Each structure stands twice: as C-alpha cells, then as structure tokens.
Amino acid sequence: MVRDVYFTYFLAGLCALAGVAYAVRVAMRGVARSERVGRIGGTMMVGQEIMDWTYWSVEPIVRGLVAMGVTANGLTWSALVLGLGAGVALGFDMFGLAALLATCSTIGDILDGQVARLTKTGSMRGELLDAAIDRYTEFAFLAGLAFHYRESPAELGLVLAALLACFMVSYASAKAEALQVEPPRGLMRRHERAVYLITGVAFASLFGLPILVTAALAIVAVVGNVAAILRLVRIGRALR
Image (cartoon, rainbow, N blue to C red; front, side):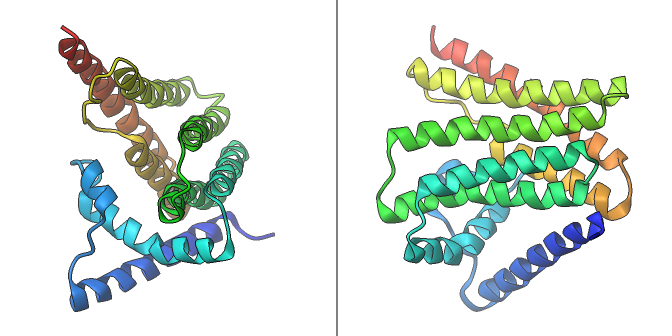
C-alpha cells in the first residue's frame, strides 16, 4: 500500500516544478499578469503574485483541455468528485491524499472558468452550478476534518467555527449581489480559505505535526468570521 505521505511528496514536487518554470518565465519575460486576477485583486492573506503564478501555471492545461473538447461543466463536476474524495480521505486520516485531491479540486474550480472564457461558453447556469459545487466541496473538506476530530471537542469546535466562516463570507457576498450592492472586498475569500486549509493538511502530513491543521483552522475561523461581520456591516451601510 502506498504510504500517505507520498501523495504529499508528489504534490510538493508539482508545486516545485511549477515554481521553477515560473521563475524561468520571470527571468526571461518578467512577471505574468492575469486580467482576471487583476479584477479580483490580492490581499494580505494571499498576494496577487501567488494568484498570477497560479493562473499562469494552469494556462497550458486550459488550452490542452479545450483542444481535447473538455467542457467547463465537465470540469466543475470533476472538481466536485475530487472535493468529495478529499473529504473522505480526511475522515480516514489520509491527509496527504486529501491535500492532493483538494488541490486538484481547487485547480478544477479555476480551470472551469478559464475554459468557459476561452470557449465563450460561460452562462448564468454555469455560474450557478460552479457556486453550488464550491459550497459542497468546501463542506466535504471540513466535514472530513469534523469526522477526524469527532472525539476532540476543542478541535471539533474549531472546525465548526471555520465552517461558519466559510459559509458566512460566501453568504455576505451573495446577499450583496442579490440586494444590488457591490460586494465588499475582504479577507478569507474562497481561494484564500482553500490555500490555508490545504496547506495546513499537507504540512501536517509532511512533518507529522497535527497542530498545523489546528493552526490553519484557527486562522480561517478567526479571520473568516471577522471578515464576514465586516462585510455585513459594510453592506448594511450601503443600504442606508
């Protein structure tokens, strides 16, 4: 049976390879800039440079998928399957496999939008599907951790607090759009939560330090809930 940590080694190798490739790109042609990243913007939690690197790294994959006829919706459903798999892996204490599957799921969430834009097949139904699956995959990840910590009240409480942060940040943004108010920017957006949670799980697998998962959960729980409250306050002021 493959040791769980080998999945983390594989993930680390992919990240290192992408990092070296981007370093060569920067040395030869300068920093890559993504129009979408420019609109989203970075924060102190995840800088724009990391986001630009990520979008640059997946660009060849996007073009390859388009050439093979892979659809945006197909990628969205694939992200769901991978995300559910990550949650199951966490429930069975396979943190390395969970980190790899969750990373692939998150990348799939990026790829579906990029493929839709490149093929001009984006639609409101596609955006609805994408948003719904984001919630399911995020829930699956945290549900897996909740099952893992089912006998530890303190860690289980952190998981629930992180889950609350995830859904309240997303709810605040969705409610702002429904009320025709520009969604306020803030911390702990979907990609930022994914980065911290997946990194915590991957490092815990790599170094054998479960406290790293606890630290990641605490960051998401505290920063995320504060960010959600600030969003709601700003939306309330905009409605006056």
